[in-house]
Length: 399
Ligand SMILES: *Cc1c(COP(=O)(O)O)cnc(C)c1O
Image 1: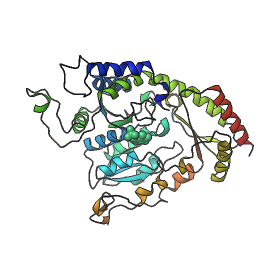
Image 2 (image 1 turned 45 degrees about the vertical axis):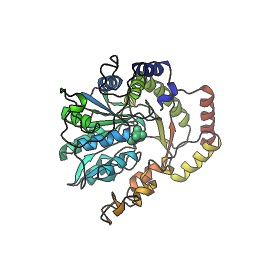
Image 3 (image 1 turned 120 degrees about the vertical axis):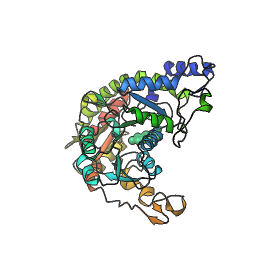
Image 4 (image 1 turned 180 degrees about the horizontal axis):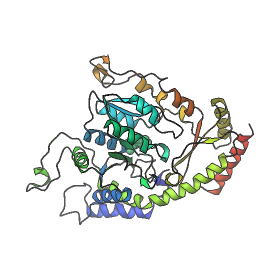
């Protein structure tokens, strides 16, 4: 998964160009910067790579979600539907806009179940955020069709699926906006960073303005200080060093995905020895960014027993149902409405709860998640590691 595995001369050379220009800020300083505009160049390259008309760089994947929601005008009184298996950032961004996150079930894709999405749409639903978790496609075509019927925009949280495609089309280009993260453990990384892509010019302009305090970025005699604004914004600006690293990493992305696909095939074969094993449903294997391999065992007890043996043999798998950061019943701060804000905002208004979350609210997801085990697929996979993993799985197959 992480692009840091293959940091090298390319990233270094890119960063040096920025340091030699002496300009770290993405805007202005035209006279000093010697033609170096790394963030702008990264945005253009990322848009061209994905096939989107526009890209807006920001400081993180969380910021990308916030900027997309802000551009769509999501706010207090609105509901935004996402899924109960995602990173906390997805619903933090929704809460931060003043809206209420609503959680849909996942199915065997481990992404949003379109049938459950349909049940959760209300007149208050202002956006839908399916997540392409662990590098593979959500049922984005079905989700988009449902959303279109209701006239609700879709934001694709593509934080974990850079380089992923569905039927030849890049993930992140199906919805109104696709958001990406380049944090330290993502497929391509700039340390911290994020991107919003869209083919809607109006939305792009709003995102561009919002992430820069509302600056309209139109030419005027006063330069940046003379720019105008039409609404309040915030600061989520990416800096030049991140843009530079992003350019180097983006150039490696297809190679990263190809290496992961090869290594994922090894994991799949090794895991196949487990009796009764079933694999996560992948809608389009060719477009899978292959950052993870997930499999299901017949029941929770068997899953526990197998992973115990795997752990003892030094090849334990990730069990997301035990993970505190990615799975709904384990988000105690959300479930208990923990906040420092007086009056209990954003969970309460004036001391009165506006939303209460039931930890048992997603039974279909629970039935799937408790049987799921995951291996993260690295870019580099030495033979000794393969031998160890294969041996551990053989041992686990015998319990
Ligand atoms: C990593 C991640 C984010 C947030 O990205 P940051 O760059 O870490 O802020 C959002 N959604 C998902 C699904 C993620 O995995």
